Structure formats: C-alpha cells, structure tokens
Amino acid sequence: EAGVVQSPRYKIIEKKQPVAFWCNPISGHNTLYWYLQNLGQGPELLIRYENEEAVDDSQLPKDRFSAERLKGVDSTLKIQPAELGDSAVYLCASSLGGGDSYNEQFFGPGTRLTVL
Amino acid sequence: AQSVTQPDIHITVSEGASLELRCNYSYGATPYLFWYVQSPGQGLQLLLKYFSGDTLVQGIKGFEAEFKRSQSSFNLRKPSVHWSDAAEYFCAVAPSGGSYIPTFGRGTSLIVHP
Figure 1 (cartoon, rainbow over the protein chains, first blue to last red):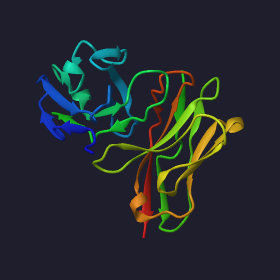
Figure 2 (cartoon, each protein chain N blue to C red; figure 1 turned 120 degrees about the vertical axis):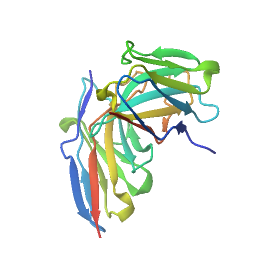
Figure 3 (cartoon, rainbow over the protein chains, first blue to last red; figure 1 turned 30 degrees about the vertical axis):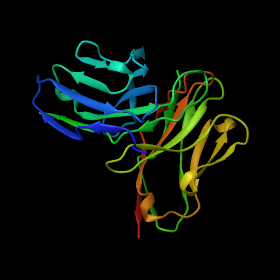
Figure 4 (cartoon, each protein chain N blue to C red; figure 1 turned 90 degrees about the vertical axis):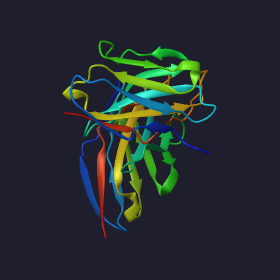
C-alpha cells in the first residue's frame, strides 16, 4: 500500500514568488494534516481537514498561506508571496478520520522549501 | 496548553550500547504521549504511544518508554542500539480527551558510532 505522497520533494524559489505543495493521502484516510517543520524543531500543525472541511486552521497564517482539499482527497498548500522565513519542511500526514477514537497519523516525506 | 521538553539536542552512542532519550512534558492532567522517529528524507514514524494503563510501553524496532507521572517524564529506551537507529527522535504530547493532535518537542538527534 502506498504511503502519503508529497511533491515536489524540494523547491527553491526567490522571495515574493508563489509556491504550492501537493499531498496525496493514503487511500481511505479522511483526515489530512499539514505541518510546518522549521530547522531543528518539531513539526507544528498548520491545518487539519476532515474530508473537504478545514476543521482546525487556527495556526495557518492566512495573510499569505492558503490550503484546499477538493473532493476530500488530494490537498494543496500555497504560499503567496513567499518570505525568507518560510524556508522549512512542509509535512503532510493522513489518518482514518472521524469520531472520538485515536487514529494513527502517517506522514509523508515532506517538501523542503528554500526561499532565497 | 501542553508542552514538551527534550533536553538533549544530540546523543552519541556506540553500536550495541544502551540508549535513553529524555522527554519531559507539561500538562495539567495525564496526557497522551508519543514517540516518533524521523530518518533522513523520510516522514515521521510512530514508535509507540501511551494513553493509560501499564506505564511501561513497548513499541516497534525494540524501543520502549516509561511514563513517570511524578517526574512528568516519558523517556525512550532501547537496550542495544543498531547503526540503523541513527535518526531524529521526537517526543510529543496531546491533551487527554481531545483530538489527539500532538505537540512535538524539538527533537533529539541520535548519532551511532560503529
């Protein structure tokens, strides 16, 4: 079974340019997460989707970041315009969703963004 | 809000030696606790978790962790380290009765000498 797929794996852009990251979760996983991992730090949640609905986006900087999950499967995270401080690894994760029980999150390999 | 402290940024051990990675948490009640491993170029993988019950938790790859309420700790251990264990290890905490969304520590980098 394929794991969480992310692309691109690496991206280098100049500041003020837009950038987008794509995530394909594990088949059947209704919950999708985007995390930001700065160098030398643990991941921090940016947004969580239950199917196509964003149920927790309190940590997403909405002035420049946006996300969507059309049809409740693939998701795209966008930054426009990018700033130097956005250089980081962007992780996507997915889990079986819904209800009050625990479902393990499975992480993708991440997209490493470098903003010059 | 909950928080996690991993006091060691780097740990170096010899292959075959025992390992203990430290983790302290801050939370008003008994939280949900996790250890993840991140190998270079790969996503995080869950090693083990503690929700309740037996305070000694067994995980994958020969790892175990012990929850000590009195010390607010959840240290990760392995009796004999293999070179393939070299990676970044993250302790995480989630509020009990919540959405199980973890708050991660900053990580400990494990270096294994042959």
